[in-house]
Each structure stands twice: as C-alpha cells, then as structure tokens.
Image 1 (spheres, rainbow, N blue to C red):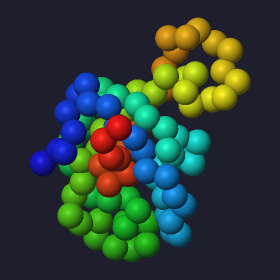
Image 2: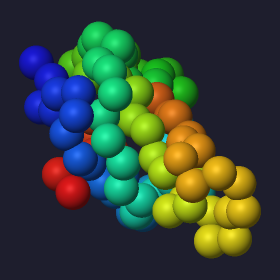
Image 3: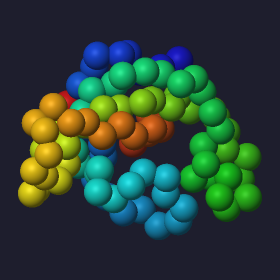
Length: 93
C-alpha cells in the first residue's frame, strides 16, 4: 500500500549507496510533489543484482520545480521536471 498520495510534498533521500541505483543523483535531497502513483513493482535495485526484487514497492511520479533542481535554471519559473521514484527513496517534506 502506498505511503504517499497525489499532492503530498516529498523529499528524495540523499545518499549514494553502493550498487545499482535507479534514482538520479541530481534529484537526491530535492523536494517535490507526488503527481501520481503508478502501482507496485519489483525493486530494480535488487533485480540489478539477480535478486527477486521483492517485496514490490510503490512507484510514484514526482514533479519538481526546475528552479529548485538546477541552481542556474533560467527557463520559465513554472517549468517542472517529472521523475519516477520508488517509495523507499522518499520521505515527507
């Protein structure tokens, strides 16, 4: 069952654990808003090392304001970046 719902503010965990990581480094530590829940899927970080990827984990579409992601972003202030992120990378913001 999903911990977050659309509209919730979340922060992507910081860190650089060893192994296969599906969360881009440039988005770690950044806050955004859950836009959708895609469902539950096997964990690709475990699958990448021959594991079963279980238990399945919720996958979210999270939107980030570009000006908060990129220090020198000079595009429109309302521009957003959307990233699919597994729940174990998210915490309440």
